[in-house]
Length: 475
Image (cartoon, rainbow, N blue to C red; front, side, top):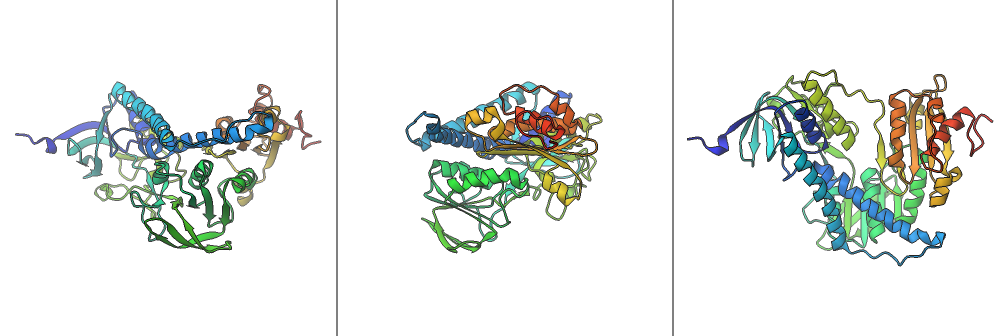
């Protein structure tokens, strides 16, 4: 008599992890004709991005944007009452967005014939995996795609406790309450985005960042308008500052700050820690395979996302690099296509990055500061949004669009934008970099007037000396 718990299932492709990298890989593999099994600890596919990351955070950031627009409409002669926050309804809205998208992924799994199993997987060998807390306990596979993602780093000696006052991004996105005083540790994506959400909802936010400035990966001229806005929105911003000690109590968190701060000892109602992420590569049986990891635990892969084991591929946060959902999805498709024998590879030249604050920041390809570090000669062409009819009419004239251009070939090497809807606009820059488009290609491609996207055309025209709405650099 067979015991169900010991049933061994066979599959062509086993995908471990149901986030963007995992489900993109599973769906592409199914489209290519493979029998696919996807295993994830969650009830439904979507991973951290859908349930505890990208989607809930951007949902709340949009709410923050709406509140800001309502408050600033008075300068246009339109007046609203001061926004009131119904925290219960806001949670319901956020959860409704998540539920709708998760339902869509479930339906896509069914229609593609992808078997989704709730559970945890660990490799027993290069072609077998053991499943825990699942209906079956063993899976034999021809190929596996590892997409286990990453987890937020805590402060040294401080743990993220469920319901505790020291939170990672997951705890912050649960919106348990709106703390009167919130400390945000870390001035990267998560820190500035979630700090903006809580400040908009009424928290007095203090942000500390160990380095010299916020958003160190983006060019300083793109970050400056955001810093100005956050300086108005936050109670305080301290750069070159770290948390020396932290003590959590039932009703408060007491910290000692060290660095550029006048009052080292401060008390907060909650603390959000956003100081980076670590790969989920432990306790998944990699030692039973040929998969290799680096000193930080990231899985080593080649440009086809192959690991050191011929049957196992890896994608997304677990392989390091830019920890972005769209990068993971791209990699997942590459891995599935390589398994199918297609000449696919992860050879992108421009990975777009977007900070969904107000104003938004977006960039792709070579940045100005990166070019400076490499001693690479470039020409930087800027178009200020103060000269954009659309931006001025929207009351968002403090934005900027810039192009990084090779002075000899005149090809577009990178683009950066700060301002409203920057994330929606950056894809033109990605396409330009990937296709080695020239400044002339962008300048001679007619953009509609008046639009924010028109600033991309005028930035290219400024390089060529033909911009209409600013005095061009060649004049």
